[in-house]
Image (cartoon, rainbow, N blue to C red; front, side, top):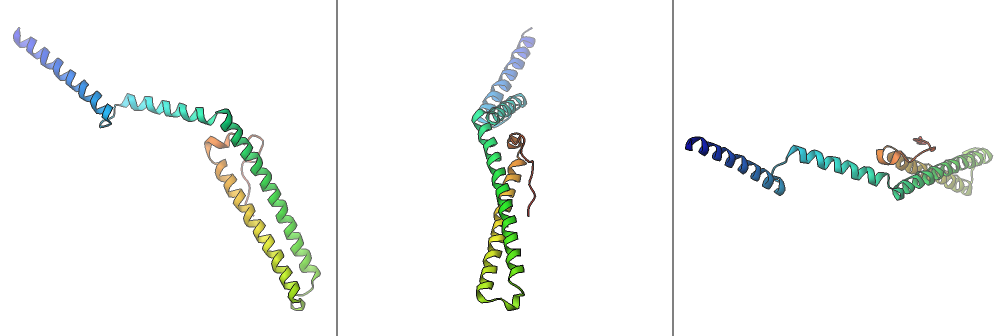
Length: 151
């Protein structure tokens, strides 16, 4: 009888020691307990969803996409005007060998305006497209284009 009681006490002591060491190890971050990881991942996902659908965040992201979309459309129109101005100048100035110094300077200025407009447009488009690919932002695009094409 004493032997059985001793074995039961020993098993109980080992189980208690394992539980105590597990709790202590988890508390110190030395070991992980699977159900605690699952609970923390659920909490993390809940926090992300709460932050994403927060009213201020939703308005900020929607306004950002709306404003950037307008900026891209305006920049595209600027490219069109710059292209027409350059083409119009080149056709009205005659052959390049007959250009004066002022003609060459004006052509260079118009070309720089065109190239600068394209660079600005492409920067806006790259930023818009990058944010549109982010899952937590793309849901706020609503009626706006999903992506723009580079020029």
